[in-house]
Length: 82
Image 1 (cartoon, rainbow, N blue to C red):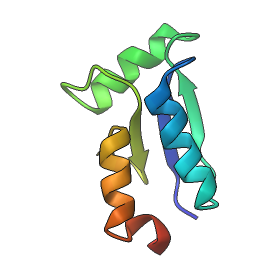
Image 2: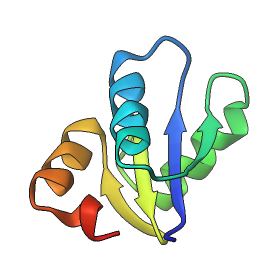
Image 3: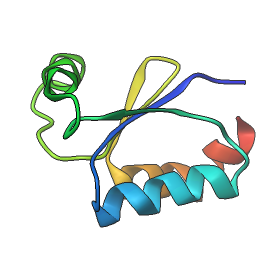
Image 4: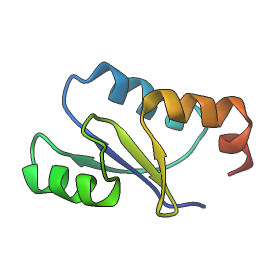
């Protein structure tokens, strides 16, 4: 199973949508809440230069992008392939 990481925040509708999609596909993920642990926002920014919004999603260390990017990734059939 791939290592999926998501940087998210409380009450973020895009974060909720992204996590819901991953759950629908039966994929487990590690969640880093950047609001509860501000150091995670710095970590996110280092891993995805220029990314300032949440969520930011990584699969096996590769930056996928945000919520819309994850849905596009899924539309191409890439999530099912995982």
